[in-house]
Length: 519
Image (cartoon, rainbow, N blue to C red; front, side, top):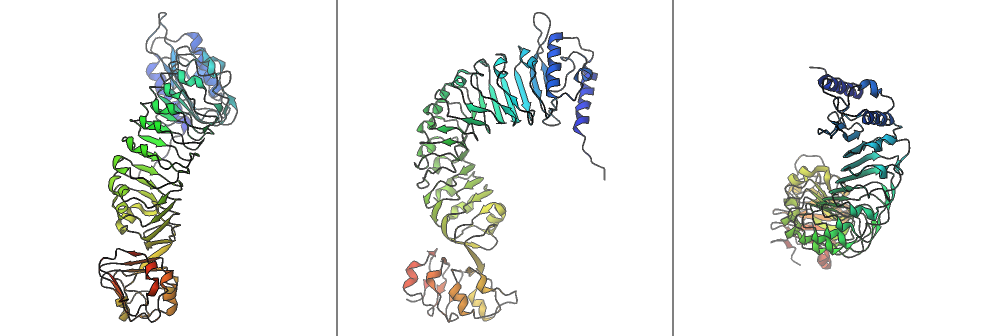
């Protein structure tokens, strides 16, 4: 077997230097000496551990580290200019100059009058670096401004964006930048992406945000934003993704969102939107593929809107205070569903059998509700989802053993009373530790007559086939303790079982031709 090993980052970086120098060293000089000096000083501020001048002694338009890019078109003086600067090692396929723990901005960074892209990945991680006094000095030629995972980057955006009239991408994620989103952002009419997430921004969304007609991505998640959402968001008709999750927005979810007819991803989860129910206007947004509303106290019932949202693949409705039943229509129409979160609500009744027919689902969370009856999922369906089928916290839900990875309210064990007369030689069950008894054609137990204590502790009963509960029960079942009672295919509870007046309290699911005694 051939030995495998990984190549150190240092080696990869210098291999790229070698091949770049070797191939391009014969090209004519294009970069002015002043602009070349500016690049050196910027590189030295990003990582002083490298000897940038000796590593790249030639013209940097012919031989430069990955991430330093020149324009191919010379100006009237025959010179090209730096148009892209990207710092921070991302991968072997994007081996930008690596940053130092004490990286900082060089004043010469703002001398590049043709710069279109400025990119920093994990550069400002220890030494605090402020945007103040720097950002506003960048030229109006900038089209992409990207800061990713720079926790020591501080400052505000106020008064620093108005010059970027050509800006298409603004990405600021994982920083300590604070303050508000300035109103001046609406003047950047070329913007197609605003991803300003996981920062320390506060206040609200500018009311004139709807003026950004070319915007396709708006992600303001994981900040401290608050207040009502402006109606003008619904005017950004080119929007494909809207993520405002994990903030403090209040009031109603504005109905103007239905104007976002091209929207595919909507995440408003974990805010403080008021008790107004799941918005019915969502049915008027047919291109939605992912919808997440979890963690808002919307309340109400799950509406019947799913026939118009058949493309949904991810649906998060956890912790909304939902009541009532789970609509069977969710399993009928959401045939592309991969994720369903309905946990931590107040949903009740049985789980629709239609949910078990969803062929693409790979995660389903129904935990912490008030669901009851027997879970209608097949072993094949449950095995496909595995540990991502979550059912715990439903004390009256009967689940066949092995179908759920979490602790559920009732466990259904296969058991055939007819077999008690001559049980097969298998390991005995400790009846007193079983919550629910299922008649599924398999015999178990080494005692043909369960003890009186067993029947008293019985809290669930499922019968199938031609099973009979009759003369073998010498001690009446405490029917009022049953959390589930399911009889299928002509099963019957025989004459000696004293159902009595408690029969109306039983949950009788799928009775068919079943009989309960003669009383």
